[in-house]
Length: 483
Image (tube, rainbow, N blue to C red; front, side, top):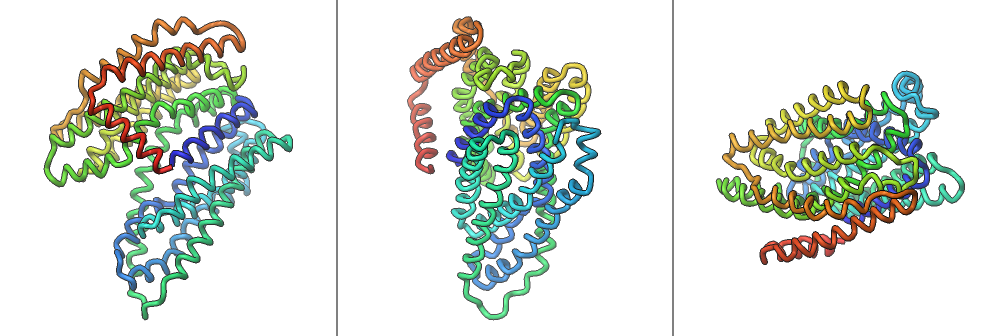
């Protein structure tokens, strides 16, 4: 997974540098629409099939019978995936370009981007099957190695041939096709490796039940994805493609703020579920507190880098990415807030209170829609960034309150605030290195940020308790061993 995150990040940086803000905005908007539609097309089967296959256990007859039914699920996903492509080809794409996103060639870009949906859906469906049979290696290889590697290679080849935007669009769809074919062939061989155990056990009733369960999962996932995308969708309607591209690039770079939190949270849900089963609510609180404390140590300094030097560092991708510093700062604040509070969602979803979590997610989506609709028409990028921050604030304050009321758990401490203050206090004196013109501006920002991170790392390492140092060593050791 580290490889996939790293190569996807590098790909994004290369693409942004080569094609410029306007074309990057067109592609990022088309990709955001594709991701939302693709989530609906696979109907949550990437999660639902894990349970479907997992329920068969090691019973040979049940496993063979359920593997034989996977074709039905794949056909459902295929049908749902082809529908939006057909609609775009029959004129919906032209209507979107004429009335919503009035960018040159946007309908064609959207159509070619959507061609990847059937392949990505099949990868997700088969990935659910492999994970449900406790054999995730083929799916991991297809999703996290083959797909991003071929995408980067195809894009670089097409760049060398002189293409720009179309290199990214076509290269992404070709990579999805290649990864899908690889996984389909692997699955056919895997399915054929199981000998027949007489008459398969009748299990057809589980198909409908799995589809219904998966649909609920898809709804929850779609709410989360829409909440993250609504600012870009409305920004694309009210502003230029260049402004969408600038905004999207900053969002992509801010993934760094939450990367350590995502790594640390890989097993957090299971640990919370284990403590909840033991009725150890105090243990849940300690676990969440420690998780936030470690995340804050890494995420707060990265926030400070974007807060003070982000506007200048973005210019490394070209002058077309110049945008107001206030936009970067509000987006960075939202990224930090989400990173420090998102783990509380596990305290609900892993303790049987997933319905409450879904309601909170819907509240966040509604707040984001209302605030974006109110602020973006007049303020553009700044309105989008402010709307995201306050909708995240509302949803996470409600989440913290619900966790406290239902579990008597409140894991935020004054020590977390001290880490935040320390990161700002150490960075502020060096923030005056920002300024200048052209390359000098970028170099001064990079030098100031690098010097700050060295000073921060030395200071925090010196202030850390011994067990905290050991925890960080173990986390990074595990992550690099997996790669």
